[in-house]
Each structure stands twice: as structure tokens, then as C-alpha cells.
Image (cartoon, rainbow over all chains, first blue to last red; front, side):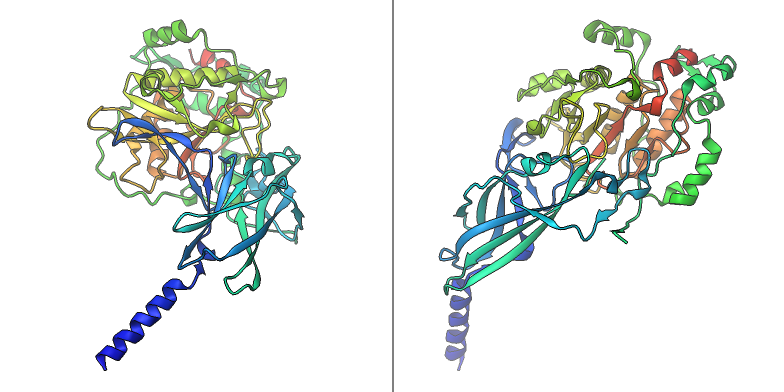
Length: 180
Length: 304
């Protein structure tokens, strides 16, 4: 009996290890250029690559979109990633001397497609994450008339084929609040 | 209803000031303290900087609630921190030394008169020695938001030199884009705003405290005393130029506001405390040198 249970457990764990599971809830972005930072342990400056869940204040030039996964995901094929910007008036956050509107966010605005140049998205697996890159975040922010408007949110639609060959699409939203 | 709202935490007065209107109120209550640093009696400075103080306090209190309700900090470490030096940092000889190294502090220009050409804050590069000598480094500067008015650039460099003498290195982040307008920010549109990292603890091996990418909630990294020293350096190089300090650490706010009052007689600005909370300011300090149209040099001259 014990042998049977052990075999069942081993089989289940083998199956669950092999199955690709993409963790869509924990997507993050990672700076691709890096920033030279002081390491107190070595007393040296070292290139570090910051990660982001949302973009606020310091906007990186280029980022990768990282989707954590477990199991064997090598057969996942991402066919394309479409990106969209939700653009709304800057004044939604309040002018400098009128902060009564702080924290307001546009609601009901439509998304503008083609947030980035039509650059092919490169896909890599680094052992823990499926990495899609590059996305020029700062360009997407600065290429609008930012004296009047602001990109309040972005949406990434990721089209992929599962290991069973099924077409699928997942949308990821990233907040971009205006900060002082 | 096109919007939904969240709590405002950066409350501002709605009143711009016209310093010219208050010239007639000056001339009394002036004094010089024993350190030789000029100061005004509190009520004079209060009236000068905040002519509608009582009224705006009521309006702001009504609109935003009392100041104590602004976002506070969860930082609990430091209940028993030693008292921080509240003496004015700069003697006249130190000020003279700054003038010799950096030239005279550029005159203040009102925003209404135009920002003029913005000046790039010099990079101190990747050399730790150069950063420690200058007292600052730039971070996340790939977006080239490294420009400010000549006065604000001077202030940053001067504060850096003051801090270098204390073995503190600050991290300067967002200033403004070269033409002033800076995407992603509601302020930083004219080279008069400065974002600074929080200052960390001293490295026991080097005795240097460096600004680090930490938050006020991370007591293993954040050092309130060293961060206060950084802000104090800015106050000392341009005490009447700073109109607000955003940082989400209520104890640090208290210390900054107390120092402004004790050292320079500045109790509030437009009915609001100068240092206060604002959403998004857990991991950096925001300093503004706008002063809503009041010439800080006039205030300093009158204080003498």
C-alpha cells in the first residue's frame, strides 16, 4: 500500500513539474540598461538592474517584461505582444497650486494602441522567468504631448500558444501614477 | 462622473504670495542670535511667508483634515535616538568657503519671470572618491532629468560640500529635463524641484553614510538622523528658498519643521508645515525651491 501511495505521489509530482505554469499575477518589469550602484559589501560601484511592478517618477529607458513560471515552458510560443497606453489629462492629478485633485485617475478612457515602435519582441527563458524584451517605457511616456497629458496606465496583451498548441491571450496592466 | 478620488495627502494652499505687499511690515522684531546668524522673530517671518496663515490653516484643515492625519510612517525604530544637532550648520566662514569654491549663490528668479536656461548638475561619475568629495552622486539619470536652475544647481552642490565634510553622500535623482518640462511628474517642470534618496547608515569600515535605495519602513537601511542632516544642509544653504519637503516619515517631518522654526523662525508656508507627507514619498525626499513667488533673498536680507 505504501509503495502504491509513493508511486502515485511521485507520478503526480513528476507531472506537475513537467506542466508549464505561468504566474501571471507576479509579472514584473526589469530595467535593461542598469544603474551603477554602490555595494557596501565590496565598497565598489556595480551595475544593478532594478525591477518594477509599476512605473512612477523614475522611468527606465528600456525594460523587459518577466513572467515567472514553473515547470517546463520551453514549448510555449509567444506570437506577439500588443501594447496600449491609457492617456488622460495631466490636470487629473491637480496643478501645482491646486492639489485638491490629487489621486484622481482617469476612468473610462480608451486605450491607444501601438505604444511602442514595432520592434519584434525577443523571448528568453532564464530558468525562473519567461522574459519578453525590449519595451521602451520612457519613449511611450515622453512621446505624447506630456505637458498636457500623461500615460496613466499601460496594457500588454500577450498572445501565446500553449504546449498543447492552443491559442491564448493574457492581458497585463501596469499603473503609471503621476508623482510630484 | 468621470473620475474617482482617493485621499489627498499633499495639501497645498490656494494662495500665491506677493512679497512686495509686505515690505511695509518689516523693520521691527529683527534680531541676530548669539551664533551671529541673522534671524527674525517668529511672528515676523510667519507674517512674511504666510500672510493668510490663519485663514489658510482653517481652509486646509477643512479640506484636508488636520496635518496629523496626513500619511504617516510605519517606521517605529528610533524612539530613543540621540538628540540630533539642531544648531545652525553653517558659520559665516563656511559660507564664505562655499562662495570661494562655487562662486556666489545665483540670484533667485521667480517662475513668472521665466526659468532661464537650466544648468546640468555635474555628474560625479562612478568614482566613489569623487562622489565622497562632492558629497553627492546622480542616480537613474539615463532619462537626462538632470537640469535645474542655476540657483538650485548651486544649492545641491553647496549642500553636497557641507555633507562631504560630515562623510555623507547624497543621491540626487529627478531634477528636470533640459527644457524644464519633465514627463511623469506633476512638478519638476522648471528646474526647481529635487528628488533625493534617503540616506542610509554609516558603513562601519569607512564611516561614510551614503544615500541608498531604501524606504522609510526599512530600518535596516534607512537612517533618519543622516537623512535629516541632508535636508538640514539644504535648509542652511537656502533657508528661505525651500517651500516644501515631502517625506513620509512623521518623525523626520517634525524634526525638519522644528529646525526651520528654531534656526530660522519659519513655522509654516501658506498655512502648511513645510515638511509633510505625500503619496509616493516613502523612498525619496522631494524638495521644492519655488517659494510661490516670494524672493527668498529678500526674506534673508530683511532677516538681517
